[in-house]
Image (spheres, each protein chain N blue to C red):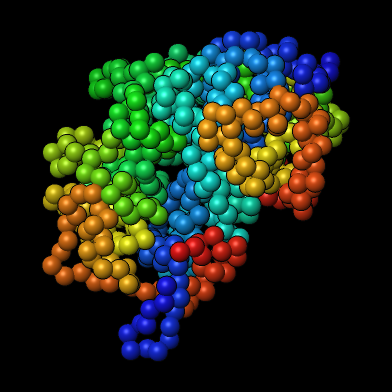
Length: 304
Length: 266
């Protein structure tokens, strides 16, 4: 059965208003499922708790800027060499968002625990030395190691209700190829109850099945497939196109104050359909396209 | 900047970032396995330079893509860049997190912070009170793992009193914690911070007090500049050298890698 849906349909059907734990894939300015994120904003879905990969970027900052996020579980929201995340920063400094402070180890191992049905997961000794577990007792706890009798830091499982994930290609049943780096997106897929995939291209099952080892997301974990060529823009889509630094800088300059972010959202998100937005970006997208493409590119590790 | 080296008439020009990369490279060993994370163009260049000079068997992992021994050329700004996948191999991020936890595989961790204190603790989370920060940082990512690796090499482009503070407001990357007693009782398996490289100088840590101590000042920098830019009482030995100026070979390797000139800044 085909899982292909239009962008509005996928969000309407699978992202309920007030969603308990929504996770967004991608890391830094790469593989952010921006078309899905923009659609969540167009449909004004409020998010009780947002989870990022170890490094969230525009995916998280835009949702925070749209005022949809009550709590965020993250180990980083920022723009790497381009600076701090303006909306996340403003919300944190003014106390309008609750932050569940995490570190990379907990997000990764916590998703693993969520995926595997583990009631909690023990974390390596030494992580308790940071202040992170002290300010987030909802995610971390100290307990007794039953084998040694010593103290051990443990983390609660992370089980997203819905994961919004970008992949390079999928067939209509949701078997998907990740172009380039995986980050922790596969763990998010494995841990989430519902997975909505945004892909550059839907291809035939025959084409997907020619590379079973490189097809790292099995369709039985996926509820919806949305084909949006260019859908990561202005972030990068590994194997397809680079991020648009100028566009990100424009975002950073506009999002620096409360009025500016509203103006940005109106111009770039709520005031336009996704098709209109990507049509406007099409010239930039073709400039940013990687010359060598996915199939011929040994860098992806996905294809022979 | 340009400096005349010794009696030679050759005049070399380099940026402070290039000097920092070359200085970090000098502290890498042939048997190291190094890992780095967000915004790590500078340590990536340091590692590649070390591989191409004195440490051909060093391994390095660009966290994010988790590329092992990326070739660079060009050097890229983002640790998650697709271009970093020109490498020996790329392993899943979850594998790198596992190995960071294992503790005996990775020997070098590059770190930084919005705040770095006298004991080498780093803070990427919040300045001011955590619940009402005056500056909310991005978050700590993998810095809590500093407690488990062999040597922590700290680098920052900001040598000023806001960054170098007596005590971090939030401990997101453990250094020598509150000092010798605290460090001993914590019993952490890592070796702690080993080096701090800034645009002004190179610093290490006094083995007894575990406080930051000057190693060398960079060419053209006065010691008073360092003292004034540091928000705690930096240990300064009676005599200290000037950081070795980059050689033309080092600079030429760095520039061959950094074709887009990311390190060319001031």
